[in-house]
Length: 343
Length: 286
Image 1: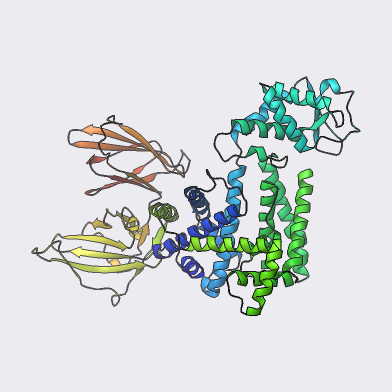
Image 2: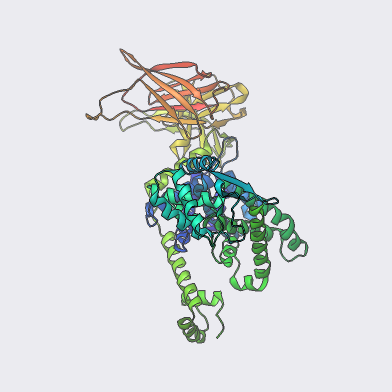
């Protein structure tokens, strides 16, 4: 890999350098995708085991990674990445390092593209959310916000003076089950919401109000599952976090990463625990971690992100030198990300 | 036994443990440790996927994608050419005629220029028999040599190459070729029309067709019937998603036909009669 990358970086417009580079990138991207799939990641392809679909997804990923926008230098994403690592002349760097960096770029770009494809706003879902909003803003319901919090609660207008605020909130899983059974009995969105609240009213052990975003999420997940025909949407697995506006999640993630660079990473660099370059790689790994967390609600084991970001580093070196710093970076990032989402 | 290190497990899975005595304790540990067993399974799986990827065949579809990405990188690019010294170039060259038994056509190499990335050679030739000068662009990839502009900015000249990378130059137009600065301008936008194969199930024909690229370049192509064949009319509707742009050069190429004209937004530009049985290459240069 390293040799091929080196040739490409030296003569990117030469077909004899570009073609082997493209082939190597394609092979390694397909490897990344198969590896993610084997570890339980859901890929945005039709038929999870379909090799042709995986290849199509790899084409999309490489199309974006190796793109050349008008007026920019050729393959600017790749060249910007390497120059960001201080590599302007590949002859000054070992081929092993070039290969490792390229693999790290392929991993991170594959994950980013999968995330981007999955979070593209589904117009059907957006339409459903809008219609639900109209129903919940009608006369039958009331929405209110607790001072000092941005969470909105919704309840039946007729219960305004009869809210069971001393009881616990219905769990999201409980709400999903409620939505499932209400959906079977009703024929319209307004009936659907009414049926959920009627059932909730009878459950005297829990509050008779709901968090509005959880209600919308549960309804959307049930309705879309029944309407779903294209095989790879998985609304049944949606979570309240998953139904946050994709832009909100991305913004929170970007802000978290900016904060992480300026605080946690900076401190470690100043204390000489890690170099600036390794700090940059940790930031990239933390970004991947947050993407997986926001997308799937779960992640790979932390060392996996380290290995993808620093493939040249052996596991023993990780345990001896980087484990504490890396785990601190990830846990602080997660903490901050969650805090920003709650805000 | 405490958990073996990941490096040890990796070596164990790959049968590469240098210390043979470590094998048995690790085997025993794996037999009872769910975590290490799972790790070994995952590592084996990763290795298998990696090996699978390493031997993966490259298909025609893969090559098409590579072409698209490469052409995107080359679009609109200007490649400077360096003059090859007389010692490096072949100097006086005789070009072989096309076929046995025919007379040798004498041609002289006036200059040879080259670029390293991409690797290309331009030869400036004089054909005494035909009494013409011509430019011959040579490269490994025909996409880089066909339908490109060879420019000499200082004397404001440009020549469009044909399917074979050749462009004719009127005699005496170039002057002292070795003192000029030469460059190659790749097309910004490419459209290729291929002749329709007759299909009895689909006999309707269209006179107009709109062609569009992924970068939101859009042109309207109209075929006007003439007794001698078809005239082609081009209207550039959008460039880079913009309907308001400065003029753009449009070239039409068929094997025997090369024509280039300037076009302003929405201007209808007529081109010569074309042969409807041959492919048509349309290129835009900004």
